[in-house]
Image (cartoon, rainbow, N blue to C red):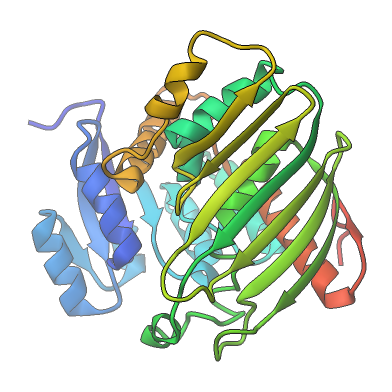
Length: 347
């Protein structure tokens, strides 16, 4: 018997990310996987069998399924904007993987269309739910760092040439974007969320370790509106495996670093003013058995709760756009060789 307060989901894109979404949704009482869609028929059929959902190869036909309440997009980044617009016009809520779009114009059209059709738009930023990141956010909000003057994110990941060659859309400007748009997107979002709005950026990017169109290595200097400085170092060229995905925050009264390969392990936690829980945080804020499943589960619970109660989610379309604007400013700086201020002027 279907619960009245459960929602029908459709997973669009039956690849690696789609599997993550489907696995988590299949474990939630508030969610039912009604349909799946992929342009490769065999993959859609197999995925549908696994999750007892109706398979589609035609996205337009899936949108006519009245039992589907929410679409979750696990497709190439360049498809997110148009698919969101079509879903919104069909009266479906939309959950999209990062980045929400490849252009600010695309993001604005997504937000506008969802608003016009009275549906909700959500962007996946699961790292905000990582236990050590939540602890870091709480400490910042409580003022434990004093005056924050420096913040950094480092993404030293490995994506062999084979990774880009497996799918023709990967490593392209039209459908994918580079290390800043794709792999570093979550970390850039965390910097902005934790430290606050960015005033200006200066960036250098390059394609230094792969045969692809887009950037695979980047170094960025940021000035936040609160006066703090920041840096981003990102690459997919590390040999032979992922080395680090970290966030570090430094203030006049405290220092902290969340590291591991995916901002999931507390590595530094030192403050001038001791609190009773500090001794336990290094133990508590370590990697859960499956960090991806844990954080995605929290994301979908937040989304379902926001729809049910008509409240703001942690990561809305507006939040996703703010991170995309920062990413676009980084690319503009790299392209022009100049410091770029935010907000971006329309071009």
